[in-house]
Amino acid sequence: MNARSYRVNVSVSPLDFPAVDGIVENTVVYHSEPFLNKDKIILTITKKFIFFNTDNKKQHEVLSVKSDYEIPCSVIESRIDVYDFYKDALLGLDEAYKYLQTQIPLLPSKLFPSQPIENYQPEIDRVFSLLIRQN
Image (cartoon, rainbow, N blue to C red; front, side):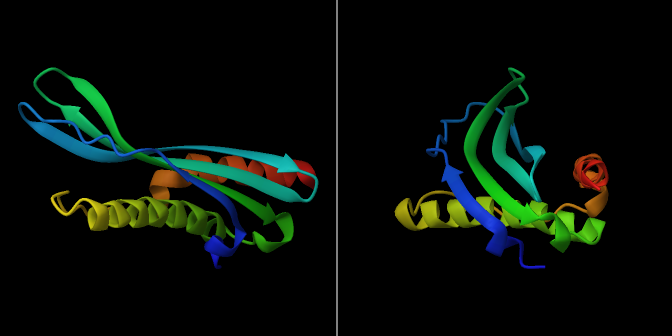
């Protein structure tokens, strides 16, 4: 499935790359909200690139990308179809970061690897719950 073709909006936060003092770990977190609107699933997925300072235990949001999708219920046939939207949202974060690297050459390289489908199972179940309620 070409998840990108169902994306209707994307918004990117300003980059906030802080000066780092101490040991920092980084991660990508996400939040999603699916809801039903007539014969479409409206799915908003926000992916955030986060720094976690292990010394002071504080988190800092470096970059956030929110992707909105309008998906006809009829095109979702399997859990992998829903998973494709989460992969596309991560790709949107990667694209935004790479674009920023072209604007700020000293920005360090960063890979945003895909997560396995099992990581999104509760979110995928929420989408399927909406589809079952609609039928």
